[in-house]
Image (cartoon, rainbow, N blue to C red):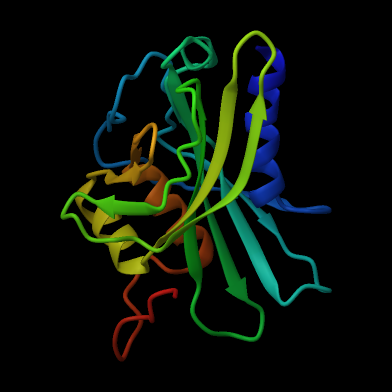
Length: 212
């Protein structure tokens, strides 16, 4: 159980955690109202004023931003037959030379469904497809198989700004072959990543491009 919990956090960190020395930005403005996470919530963790870690390595073309984790469920429920939990962060890259910022949610899903979920598709509340890709998969079959799958979901700056303005979470569903968890990104996290990257205000002259 401890191995699975540690692995889930490690996989998220390996995808999004800054390398080398970085600084931490904390949003001064909390979410306009408390936001509840979607799904069976037996161990949710949210922060009204989440921290954003910034990695500014001059040898890399992009500056990287990573929020705190936000969780749905707990590892004890995930290792039971049919159990599941998710752990997520928001991640952004800002080109040092200028240009559009790319925003993504990295979602680690730990489940004991008996088969890979793969997650070939992700859709939002309006059934629109969000660009996504499963980037990491691992299985631990000590006393029953527990699967860990990490999915990268692209979020447009417009979607993040709408959440930051309204206080409503960004909800989407990972459509999998064995499990299909719902994820709710708290509005405070959307605001925090936008403030850290300077993307809270609509750019003059039109909208920013959406990430491919």
